[in-house]
Image (cartoon, rainbow, N blue to C red; front, side, top):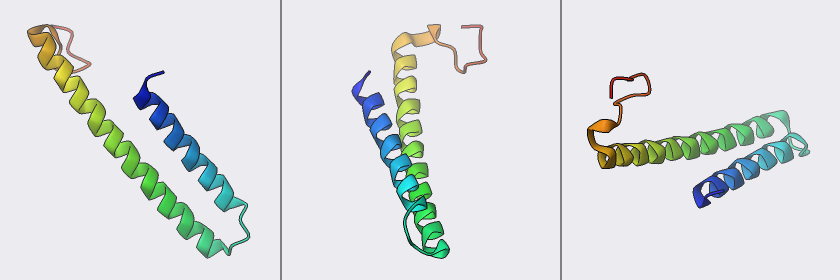
Amino acid sequence: MSTKNTLFALIAAASAGAALALLFAPDSGQKTRKKLMKEAESVKDTLAYRLMQAEEELLHLRERMGKKAPKSALDTTA
């Protein structure tokens, strides 16, 4: 497993653990919902960042391959 995949798995596991801890915490429903929304926002931001990194890496690989690489996953005329 690569370092990026390991880091992503660690972030995902920590987020899932935090969400479960919040569900079983003795806070009011309103406080728990706020905490869950904050955690969901954090996960969304992390995933958006990871997607941006993956897109940049794919563009870099495409540049290295030159014209052999398709412009999209649906382009089979490369």
